[in-house]
Image 1 (spheres, rainbow, N blue to C red):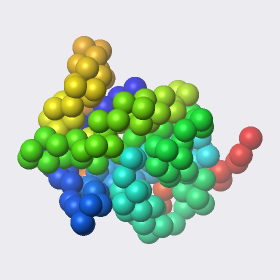
Image 2 (tube, rainbow, N blue to C red; image 1 turned 180 degrees about the vertical axis):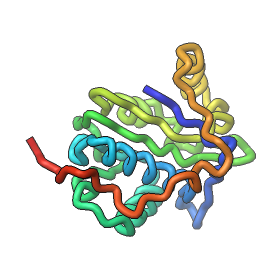
Image 3 (cartoon, helix red, strand yellow; image 1 turned 90 degrees about the vertical axis):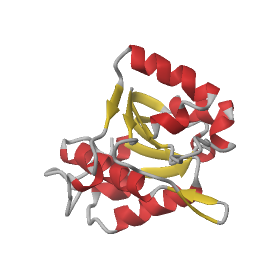
Amino acid sequence: MVFLNTDEVPAVETRVGHLVCNETEAILVQQLICALLRAGVPGYLVGVISPYRHQLKLITRLFQQVSAIACEDIEINTVDKYQGRDKSCIVVSLARSNANSNVGDLLRDWRRVNVAITRAKRKLVLIGSLKTLKSSLLFHELLDLLQERDWIQVLPQDAQRLFSFITCASQQPSQRQ
């Protein structure tokens, strides 16, 4: 398990009415998934979760811009749709990052958070703002544990610009087993 802290990037959430998304964080998710695919992880073993539908639409749109057969196998869904399902590698886009440290109602729901962090069989990657999420008692305890184990990585400023993938595809075609 690893938590990728976006506070230095910065990756600030935006709102369209009641819809929450974080474009910079979506780019980071896309880069991470592309790196996994290029490293040889088959797309069908990878899942992306976010409690925010608008964030998932943004991530899906970014993947549609990258031509790769392996990307078609990646499952991108809300926390609720992942209930009772799992994948070898799960990337969770938490999306919330704001000056008020407001995590919103969805990330205060311990059942949703529980589902999100228990879907990974082998590797769980959480992406979000440490400062914002620590304001929630639920995340505060989890993040304290991750800090104790040195499982938090601070992403550098402009991390979303460090890598650019024309294609996510690895050298080998995706094969389901």
